[in-house]
Length: 53
Image (cartoon, rainbow, N blue to C red; front, side, top):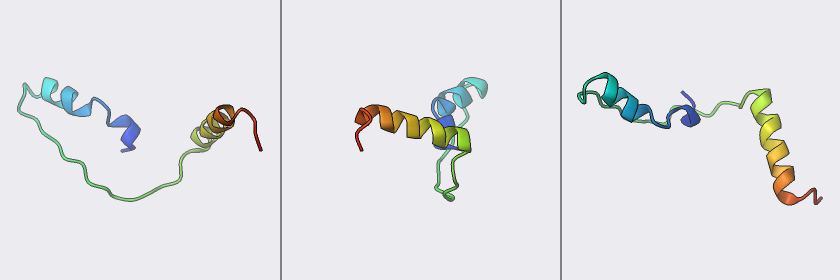
């Protein structure tokens, strides 16, 4: 699962399990981001630089 989707997971798990659930995170591998994520990140990067080259 991408790290971006892990935000709030532990609290949701505890809520669903009545406080008994737990989880741990372990790195598995890197994987290329989907094209739409790459494009969004590129736009944000250019925006932060103010269009400098």
